[in-house]
Image 1: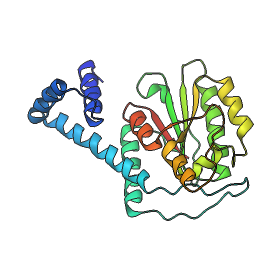
Image 2: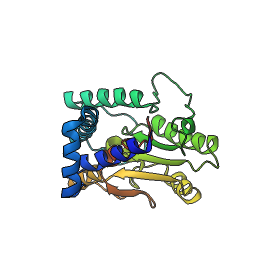
Image 3: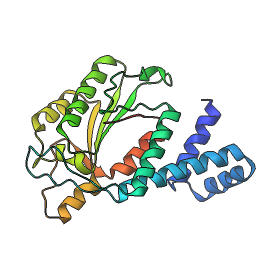
Image 4: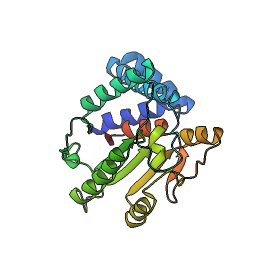
Length: 235
């Protein structure tokens, strides 16, 4: 990406997030009127943000209060399904990485060669499924070793059922998560603040494991990371 293109991209991200000042916004609006490609990109970013937010608005908070409950049935709204499809399409078109537990794919793309930059990876879990979370931990270890000494950054983001693995009341991985956080400065665990608030409203314990970040909705965090080029793996 050219330096000029990168600068425009950053301005568009700020515009979509409503972070531009009056003068900057006025200058951008003039550009949007005269440049169709920039206008299309702004629409694409806005649509992506709205769809991802939509997919999270109706999410069901996790229900597990004791270890051992690994499966639960959920009803997906049409909007949520549409959003998921859109994210998948955007992910593949942008070169993001996705892992499917169902098809058993296990090959990792050489992420540090995608853009010639330091690898930045999101591992996203939204299911209360032990097999999936064990895979999250395995992928974290694999990426750390594969890209050792490259400055790789990893974030494990959990929402909905995935919060079961971040909470002290339900996680069977408390010590393991603490060990990873203590050992690696470049690995963060993030629990969706909106999902935790829903748990509190239901009278459930929403306390998270020490060291886990729980100050931001998962949707907002994913949008910010994905629009800034992070690789994405949904497990």
